[in-house]
Image 1: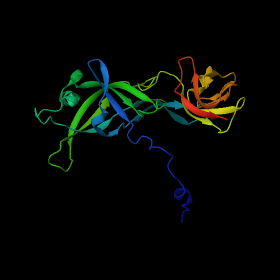
Image 2: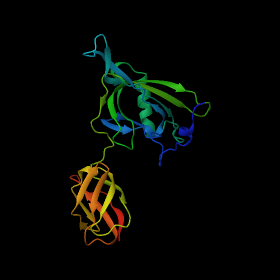
Image 3: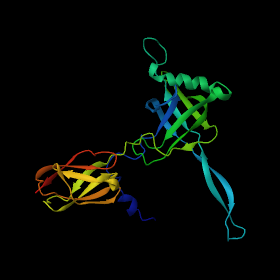
Length: 251
């Protein structure tokens, strides 16, 4: 029998579960990509690798496959909302009508441009953009008063991996914590957050920090300036701008 200790002692990290609801899809309408995911359920990207055969040099008779791209066939369900007054599809779901018309069209009229974002909360996850054909089928909900449409897309040509995610921020640092507690003037504190490897200046309690030691993207070490005391705000700055403010008690 397997030793189940590893499973029994495993707990999820603090916070919401990764990728629980963060995957989104955007449709290009009137030249602008708009997020349509508010009404989308069960979004699956269904990516499959495109490979080419290559020879492994120095190993006679052995071959390898190299990934040169991906085909995508995203599928998602949409619960259609009807305006109670006009009895038409709600104005906020005008894109549903557009996709329905695309699904029953041919040639170029069947194609739409989409962006696929694998995590809408973390810009480090990949995002893709491309042109897709559209098909639709009715989904069985089990309820007579609900209508659900299941759209499936198929990329038409190359889907590009975006060099910058659509959710990328402007680049300022973001602070989360500072420690250890109980440090005073001249002591070093460790500040944690994001984009901290590019910090060029900092203030504590409005006073300029003279010793700044960026450690990595998430960590910078600061010395507490002489005039800082009590509840002190920490702000760091990179070439883009200033961070948010967090508080630290200087003893």
